[in-house]
Length: 323
Image (tube, rainbow, N blue to C red; front, side):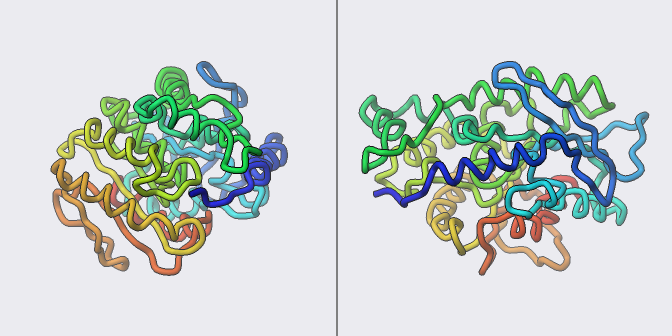
C-alpha cells in the first residue's frame, strides 16, 4: 500500500537547509530582500524572507503572494540541494517587461521536521474514522517509522499566516489588503489549496504546483482515506469561482508521476462547481481564455524539483498577476 520513503532522510534535507541558510540573507539578482528573523504565534517562530520587486516604491500599494518553503525560493547557494525557484529572476523579468503587476513575495520558511505536520490539511483528517486516523498517523506498515513525528497542525499554521504574519506585512509595507495570494509546491501546493478553502475572504488565488495529493506518501487512490476525504472537503469548501483563481500543474517524472489520476479527479470537482478549467495553453503566448478561473497543466518529462517549478513559474504568475 505504501510507497516506501525514508522519512528521516527527507527531514534531514530541510533541517540541513535551515542550518545552512539561517545566518545568510538570500542574494537576489532582481529586487531586494527584507528578513523577519523570528516571527511565530500558533506555531514555532521562524524566518520570513520578503522580496520587494524592482523599482519598489514605499508609497505604492502592492498585491502580496505568500509562499511556503521560503528558504528554497531565492538563492541556491544556501539550499540543501543547490536548487531554487528563481523567484526574483522570474518575477523580476516579468515585472520589468510589464507582463505582470509588481508584487511583494513573502517567503515563509518551513520548520524542518514539522513541515509535513504543518502542511497536511487538518480538517479532512478529522473526517477519518478513529481506525483510519490511527493507521495514517501512527506507524508505517513495518511498524518502524512514524508517518508523522508531530501532531498535524496546519490549522494553526494558517492562523499564523492570517492572524500574525499578514498583519505584520501590512504594517511594514503598503499592500492591497484584498489582493493576497498563496502558493507552493508538493505539500506546499496542498496547504495552499487548503488555505484558499479555509480563508476565501483572505486569499483570492492559490498556486499549487506538483500538488502532493496523497498527503502521506501513500498513492492517491480509493484506498487512501485522506485523499478520499480531501476530495469531499474540496467539494464542500472550494471558494466562489467568480472571485477566486486556482492554478495546478504536474509532470510525469519522479514523485510527479503518481499525480495524474488524482489531478484529473480534482479538475472534475472544479468543473462541477462552476470553475472554468483550462488545461491547454500556448506556452509561448501565455494567453488565457477570458473568464478562466482554474488552470491545470501537464508537463511531459518534468520532475518533482525546484528546477522544474522555476522553469514554469512564469505561467501561474501571468495567470494570477497578468497585466
